[in-house]
Image (cartoon, rainbow, N blue to C red; front, side):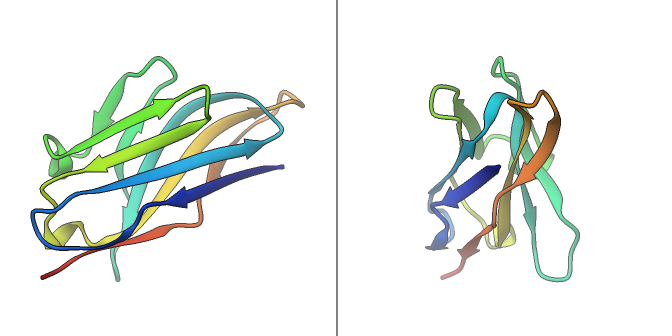
Length: 120
């Protein structure tokens, strides 16, 4: 019914930048909140950033001032611009979206995850 496809992960040196993208497709009527979580090895999945339909954002304290979340509603896509990356940002990053289907039911969908590794 709905797919979230992520792209943009990879290996980057400390202080570098990456931009993640996540595009939603399928039987979509509306998309509400979109956002990103991350999960490091042996740790729980934590919220990184979220953005509402109107563009209101919220960030984890650990990424404030370094990461920027944005969305293109026409493309059903959410982005995460990550600057000044640190080794502790290393994790699998998952996008999510709260989506209302053409059936009027609303569900939360997840991307497949993309690895971000910050290392010299």
